[in-house]
Length: 434
Image (cartoon, rainbow, N blue to C red; front, side, top):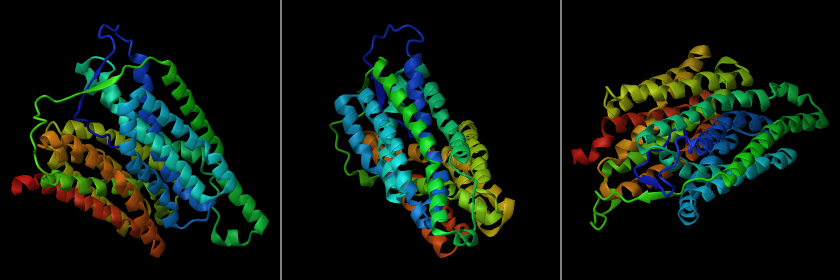
């Protein structure tokens, strides 16, 4: 996830504590590469949505199922991934996750040959299932690969590669996946059946080489994990918490339930804003798909990365809930502006949204876990599972777009950001209010 979940557990390594300085450098590089690998897939989705819509002749609702396949895999595989890690270790879980990732990438080749949309969705589900394993292991691994006093610095450095993926995903997709050929309905109607088949086959085929290369790179990284000595991750219980004390139902924490609901809506907004940007740019300003994808990478992706660091700085001066509320209000205003204007004003409004989204996931996460005591781990699991919002909101946008237009579909993220505003203003303190 681009948001980068917050971990509340403590981890140690069972390797020799007398390891030489720098002995963890290569393992750290390997683990850090995982942050880029999952960000790359997430940020190729906004390119795949318009591309497969064209190649497979889909409606907006059908094309939005690309994100649904990815986030449904996260929802379904999160608990199994954790179980595998506990039984076989984090290194084995990472290698298995990378193998799933590579298999899913290679499945794009027969999917393109068949031009069956369900085949593409299946391939994405396999990739995302692998990502669930990678994200489960990456954070704890980073924290133990070196001096415990610099664990937070290492984690921030590793998570910055999410931003690199957010920038490069759409840019690489524009260059190697999008053909740049955008035919009108009249031009397509004038084609013979043979010409139409050749055109659609050529469009579908552009994914073969990029995803084959991705699969090969992932396999190489998996092999490096196999031959590299990695420390075992062991979770240390928090002795400050009385594990024998019953605290009652998790649902008595009203602020946590509010956070779970808000995270659902936030992730839905984050995915939806980016997912349909290329279609939005074409509709509202006539921007070609390749140019729109490059804008998404270099403006929105870079803005998200810069916003994460700037927001972290602001939180040293402004309370997190206040900053969350302000950023939520700004995004409500930006989405509203994008819906009622045309041209580059509307495009600019959408492109600025990721900058203000950047602090939302970790902020909602941390506010939701405040004061949970022994319920913290279960609360964390609920917050992670709430990312299924990324599977629900894009299809709603596709449904609205098919019924009206893509610009009106942005009412979905508008509502989602309004929920974020409510949580920052009131939802985070529901228990205190009671």
